[in-house]
Image (tube, rainbow, N blue to C red; front, side):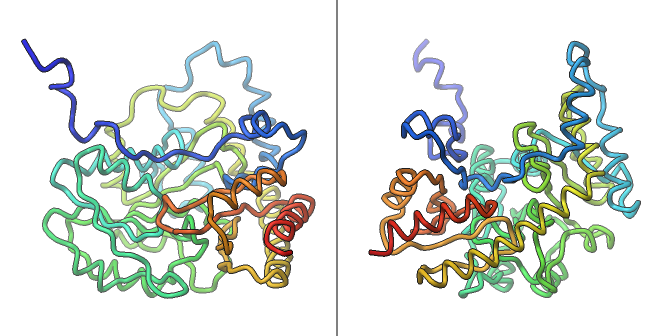
Length: 371
């Protein structure tokens, strides 16, 4: 025998460029030696977690010695209620975070030789998970200063091997949204063997009049899947829980990938409670909107390039090397995220914090960029 165990390894799983999440606050504190640091790098909720979710965690903490519910029926029922009964429980699929749902969707629809279409700048896991399965990634970049969807370019890329088209709105990392007419045109034109995946994990923050979620398309039985997460607005990033909704036919097909006890007790109970915490969401969104206006004014004074955002972050383009800028910001006690790996070269994404965090961020910008 020769060749070693590597001879049975899948070539698509050999070490390569991977998606790496943002660094942790403790890691940076230890490395920098600072006593205080503002983490504005991962788009977490600066206010913390939904109080109702936290109460649910405390209430159910003694249940962790037992297995959780075998199915996710309770959460899917709560989600149906959250959407006003427009979607049935059978139209939801739950998973361990929004990014895990991307993996779920990839495994459900992609094989070697299939293709997906993305539009850079875009969230990198779309590409990473597809490539792990041997699929080919076609990039039709967003166009213009507002990062519009190149609908005609996407339609030209579709062929018999195309399975998924990923749209992100509001988009990570640009913060911009895709106007509804552009999505309408795309969905009206795609063939039956293609699914449009709309990643809408920042939907609570979107204010644009022409913004849309995937809901109207799913309601009209289109081949569309929406991805959502409890990590952002609800402040439950550490619990790793997300969901998708689609037509019943697509959702039930995807559900075949689930395993018993997939969701742990605490995550499921916290998510159910969070869905009822409208007050927390309203407070969060109002804070983001007011602080966004504050930051626009300050960024304009500094004269740095930025993009107006429909999400809870603002992406900037400092007039210096992005890696050096990130390092200098950490020296100032501010964690930010470079997004070159997302296809947004030379740019840095910064989460919108509360006034204290934002003032510290502005002071750091002035110290680094204004002399």
